[in-house]
Length: 129
Image (cartoon, rainbow, N blue to C red; front, side, top):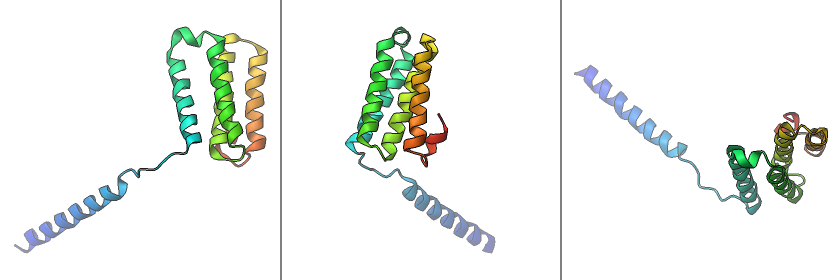
């Protein structure tokens, strides 16, 4: 009988801990800034471009996405969104270079990554380019 009481107490405590853990693990609803929303929309469009075979072969869509990422970066020259925008601009130009085989596209991608390292030296993406 004592073992049953202990087992029941353990189950109640475990259930309480589990419920408390789930309550704290629930995702917090947080507003994103308009700039973060613009970055996310551009990143979504970038991923969609990667999935669209006909468009990936064209130059203009890559240049348009790069331009949008650079615009985001320019609006946040010292912040996290700016760093992410500049990094993605480099990735966009790198994707274009892999398709165009043009040295100028590779050089432009490298320039974006170098600017990222100089402008955001402490950002986690600064050493990823």
